[in-house]
Image (cartoon, rainbow, N blue to C red; front, side, top):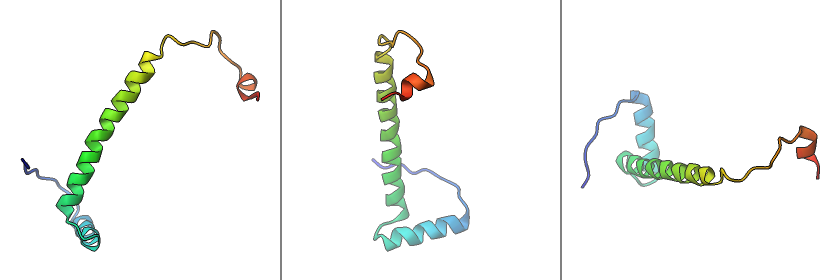
Amino acid sequence: MLKNITLSAEEQLIKKAREKAQQEHSTLNARFRQWLRQYAMNSSKTTDYEQFMNSLDYASPGKKFTRDELNER
């Protein structure tokens, strides 16, 4: 079920966004829903990444490396 929300933006920006969406054979609403879906999904990817990195806390190099040691090949 779709739910309405109200957003505010500059009139010129809305006009340009509508024109761009029309050129892409879409609507501003459709583009916003697409953006919102991606935005919501990206936050879960970030959370997954953070959880993964936290799960690696047990791994430790044993010492702090110098810049020269890090740049050795």
